[in-house]
Image (cartoon, rainbow, N blue to C red; front, side, top):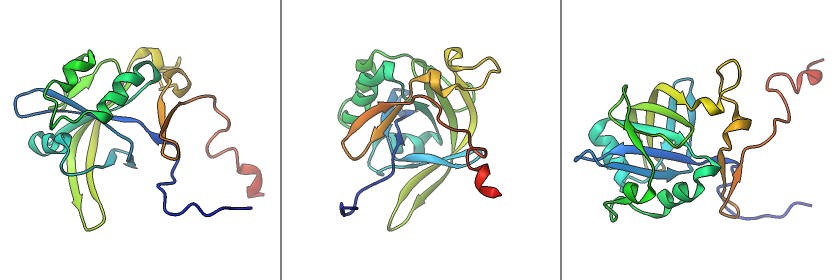
Length: 189
Protein backbone atom coordinates (compact mmCIF):
# COMPACT_ATOMS: atom_id res chain seq x y z
CA UNK A 1 0.00 0.00 0.00
CA UNK A 2 1.20 3.51 -0.84
CA UNK A 3 1.17 6.44 1.57
CA UNK A 4 0.88 10.10 0.54
CA UNK A 5 3.83 12.16 1.79
CA UNK A 6 2.82 15.57 0.47
CA UNK A 7 5.04 17.83 -1.59
CA UNK A 8 8.70 16.78 -1.31
CA UNK A 9 11.80 17.21 -3.49
CA UNK A 10 11.62 13.46 -4.14
CA UNK A 11 14.56 12.87 -6.46
CA UNK A 12 17.24 10.55 -5.18
CA UNK A 13 20.15 10.43 -5.32
CA UNK A 14 21.24 14.03 -5.61
CA UNK A 15 24.90 14.67 -6.29
CA UNK A 16 26.90 16.66 -3.76
CA UNK A 17 28.35 19.39 -5.97
CA UNK A 18 31.07 21.81 -4.91
CA UNK A 19 30.75 25.06 -6.86
CA UNK A 20 33.99 27.06 -6.77
CA UNK A 21 34.49 30.67 -7.83
CA UNK A 22 36.71 33.69 -7.28
CA UNK A 23 35.35 36.91 -5.82
CA UNK A 24 36.30 40.43 -6.94
CA UNK A 25 39.55 40.18 -4.94
CA UNK A 26 40.55 36.75 -6.25
CA UNK A 27 39.49 35.03 -2.99
CA UNK A 28 38.24 31.45 -3.41
CA UNK A 29 34.63 30.73 -2.50
CA UNK A 30 33.09 27.24 -2.52
CA UNK A 31 29.48 26.27 -1.91
CA UNK A 32 27.78 22.90 -1.55
CA UNK A 33 24.87 22.58 -3.98
CA UNK A 34 22.73 19.47 -4.31
CA UNK A 35 20.33 20.80 -6.91
CA UNK A 36 22.29 20.43 -10.11
CA UNK A 37 22.38 18.14 -13.11
CA UNK A 38 23.77 17.60 -16.57
CA UNK A 39 21.44 19.18 -19.10
CA UNK A 40 23.31 18.39 -22.34
CA UNK A 41 26.50 16.59 -23.35
CA UNK A 42 28.50 19.73 -22.57
CA UNK A 43 26.30 21.66 -20.12
CA UNK A 44 25.37 21.59 -16.45
CA UNK A 45 22.55 23.44 -14.74
CA UNK A 46 22.59 24.56 -11.12
CA UNK A 47 19.39 25.64 -9.37
CA UNK A 48 20.72 28.25 -6.96
CA UNK A 49 19.43 31.25 -5.06
CA UNK A 50 20.51 34.56 -6.55
CA UNK A 51 21.68 35.88 -3.18
CA UNK A 52 24.51 33.33 -2.84
CA UNK A 53 28.04 34.76 -2.91
CA UNK A 54 28.79 32.06 -5.50
CA UNK A 55 26.14 33.42 -7.87
CA UNK A 56 27.52 36.95 -7.53
CA UNK A 57 30.99 35.59 -8.33
CA UNK A 58 29.73 33.64 -11.36
CA UNK A 59 28.10 36.78 -12.72
CA UNK A 60 31.35 38.69 -12.16
CA UNK A 61 33.77 36.17 -13.69
CA UNK A 62 31.47 34.33 -16.14
CA UNK A 63 33.10 31.10 -14.93
CA UNK A 64 33.02 28.45 -12.20
CA UNK A 65 34.09 24.90 -11.49
CA UNK A 66 31.89 22.05 -10.29
CA UNK A 67 33.57 19.27 -8.32
CA UNK A 68 32.01 16.04 -7.13
CA UNK A 69 32.49 15.73 -3.38
CA UNK A 70 33.90 12.48 -2.02
CA UNK A 71 33.61 10.67 1.28
CA UNK A 72 37.20 11.51 2.22
CA UNK A 73 36.21 15.18 2.36
CA UNK A 74 32.70 14.93 3.81
CA UNK A 75 33.49 17.34 6.67
CA UNK A 76 34.69 20.05 4.28
CA UNK A 77 31.87 19.44 1.80
CA UNK A 78 29.24 19.76 4.52
CA UNK A 79 30.97 22.89 5.90
CA UNK A 80 30.71 24.49 2.45
CA UNK A 81 26.95 23.94 2.69
CA UNK A 82 26.42 25.40 6.14
CA UNK A 83 28.81 28.38 6.02
CA UNK A 84 27.96 31.39 3.87
CA UNK A 85 30.53 33.25 1.82
CA UNK A 86 28.39 36.36 2.32
CA UNK A 87 29.13 36.37 6.07
CA UNK A 88 32.36 34.37 6.43
CA UNK A 89 35.23 35.97 4.50
CA UNK A 90 37.71 33.18 5.31
CA UNK A 91 35.32 30.32 4.52
CA UNK A 92 37.64 28.52 2.09
CA UNK A 93 40.77 29.10 4.19
CA UNK A 94 39.05 27.47 7.19
CA UNK A 95 38.56 24.26 5.17
CA UNK A 96 42.29 23.65 4.83
CA UNK A 97 41.80 22.52 1.21
CA UNK A 98 43.97 23.53 -1.74
CA UNK A 99 42.87 25.61 -4.74
CA UNK A 100 44.69 26.05 -8.03
CA UNK A 101 43.57 28.32 -10.85
CA UNK A 102 42.03 26.55 -13.82
CA UNK A 103 44.02 26.96 -17.02
CA UNK A 104 40.77 27.14 -19.01
CA UNK A 105 38.36 29.35 -17.01
CA UNK A 106 38.68 32.08 -14.39
CA UNK A 107 37.78 29.81 -11.48
CA UNK A 108 39.59 27.63 -8.94
CA UNK A 109 39.97 23.86 -8.96
CA UNK A 110 39.81 22.33 -5.50
CA UNK A 111 42.58 19.75 -5.68
CA UNK A 112 41.24 17.39 -3.03
CA UNK A 113 37.94 16.67 -4.81
CA UNK A 114 38.52 13.86 -7.33
CA UNK A 115 36.46 15.04 -10.34
CA UNK A 116 36.03 18.61 -11.56
CA UNK A 117 34.15 20.22 -14.44
CA UNK A 118 35.54 23.57 -15.59
CA UNK A 119 32.68 25.75 -16.82
CA UNK A 120 32.01 29.00 -18.62
CA UNK A 121 28.75 30.78 -17.84
CA UNK A 122 26.42 30.01 -20.76
CA UNK A 123 23.15 31.44 -19.50
CA UNK A 124 21.18 32.49 -16.44
CA UNK A 125 17.55 31.41 -16.45
CA UNK A 126 15.44 33.68 -14.24
CA UNK A 127 11.72 33.02 -14.29
CA UNK A 128 8.88 33.09 -11.80
CA UNK A 129 9.60 29.45 -10.94
CA UNK A 130 13.35 28.92 -11.28
CA UNK A 131 16.71 30.64 -11.02
CA UNK A 132 19.34 28.53 -12.72
CA UNK A 133 22.93 28.92 -13.79
CA UNK A 134 23.76 27.06 -17.00
CA UNK A 135 27.44 26.32 -17.51
CA UNK A 136 29.20 25.14 -20.65
CA UNK A 137 31.67 22.44 -19.63
CA UNK A 138 35.01 23.18 -21.30
CA UNK A 139 36.99 20.43 -19.54
CA UNK A 140 36.69 17.64 -17.02
CA UNK A 141 39.72 16.67 -14.96
CA UNK A 142 40.05 13.75 -12.59
CA UNK A 143 42.59 12.51 -10.11
CA UNK A 144 44.35 9.44 -11.53
CA UNK A 145 43.25 7.44 -8.47
CA UNK A 146 39.65 7.42 -9.76
CA UNK A 147 40.47 6.31 -13.32
CA UNK A 148 40.25 2.80 -14.71
CA UNK A 149 42.86 1.09 -16.89
CA UNK A 150 41.40 2.82 -20.01
CA UNK A 151 41.59 6.30 -18.46
CA UNK A 152 37.82 6.56 -17.82
CA UNK A 153 36.33 7.70 -14.52
CA UNK A 154 35.60 4.64 -12.37
CA UNK A 155 32.75 5.71 -10.11
CA UNK A 156 33.30 2.71 -7.84
CA UNK A 157 36.79 4.04 -7.04
CA UNK A 158 35.72 7.63 -6.36
CA UNK A 159 33.65 7.30 -3.18
CA UNK A 160 31.38 10.10 -4.37
CA UNK A 161 28.81 11.55 -2.00
CA UNK A 162 25.08 11.50 -2.67
CA UNK A 163 22.56 13.57 -0.74
CA UNK A 164 19.32 12.08 0.57
CA UNK A 165 16.74 14.87 0.75
CA UNK A 166 14.32 12.65 2.67
CA UNK A 167 16.51 12.30 5.78
CA UNK A 168 19.21 14.93 5.06
CA UNK A 169 21.85 12.20 4.95
CA UNK A 170 24.97 11.64 2.91
CA UNK A 171 25.59 8.32 1.19
CA UNK A 172 28.41 7.07 -0.98
CA UNK A 173 28.45 5.57 -4.47
CA UNK A 174 28.88 1.82 -4.54
CA UNK A 175 28.67 -1.26 -6.67
CA UNK A 176 27.45 -1.41 -10.24
CA UNK A 177 24.21 -3.38 -10.50
CA UNK A 178 23.47 -3.16 -14.23
CA UNK A 179 24.59 -1.83 -17.59
CA UNK A 180 22.79 1.06 -19.31
CA UNK A 181 21.26 0.28 -22.69
CA UNK A 182 21.68 -3.42 -21.98
CA UNK A 183 19.93 -4.43 -18.74
CA UNK A 184 16.48 -4.01 -20.30
CA UNK A 185 17.21 -5.43 -23.76
CA UNK A 186 15.34 -8.68 -23.05
CA UNK A 187 12.07 -6.70 -22.95
CA UNK A 188 12.64 -5.52 -26.55
CA UNK A 189 11.72 -8.95 -27.97
